[in-house]
Length: 168
Image (cartoon, rainbow, N blue to C red):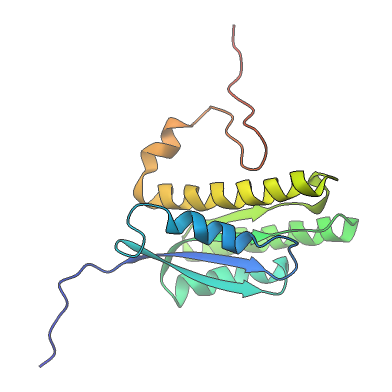
């Protein structure tokens, strides 16, 4: 006779990143999630790395369907060439389709290589956007009021917030 565990099943958050990115976005996202309340007790992180951003949709879908993730953070860096922008659009469409097919949120986190010519600024965008979206994934599952409190506030990930419209 097997004994049933009385401990609740841990929620899983997926992180999928790429080899093509020039910054370790996955490490930043995982680090942010590891600092969230309940890490290891209430939720765990399942991580995968794929070659490029066109591979994100299937990897995210697998994290949901095979690994039981409740949300996935999909991180990548499209290059600056026109073909890279076109491929990023197609990858984005795949991510949206994976969300619809699984009825599960997949937070697309792209940092385009040409968002800044300054490597220090670009690295800070990578770090901030990766961490902010990882935190958003956590809030979606455990603290949705955090998102509601920021509605209409012009909150950005990567660069400074835009702020709400001045309606005076």
